[in-house]
Length: 133
Image (cartoon, rainbow, N blue to C red; front, top):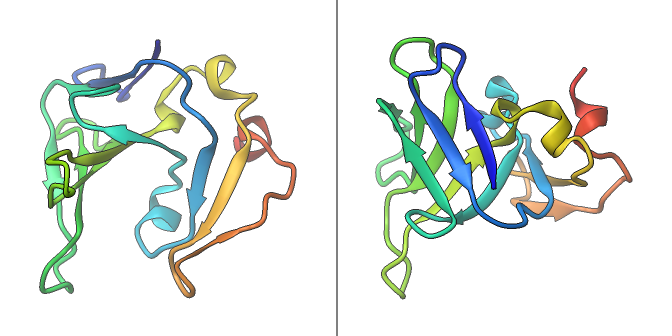
């Protein structure tokens, strides 16, 4: 099981099983937050525990997701879909930068162009350890 926690320790997440590759997105939120995401569904393999506050894009009439962060230290814990999928499940992603570096250093990076094309970018061979600095 993989875990990550905010700076003050008030909130954390767990991800059971293989996290798969990490996703680096360049959308207007992700590039500012510097996040690396791992995905699943809320209450299945991913659980977020502790106090959180959410941010929803104010410039969208029907935002698709909300960003969850610690109200004390401000660390971004996850994003969560605002709508359920056709199976009644809610998509969620956790910020791998909150995990211990050794636990995620080997994960390959998938790049996603959330700013312009909304498409995946071919892998370039980098992994999480290459993105720490």
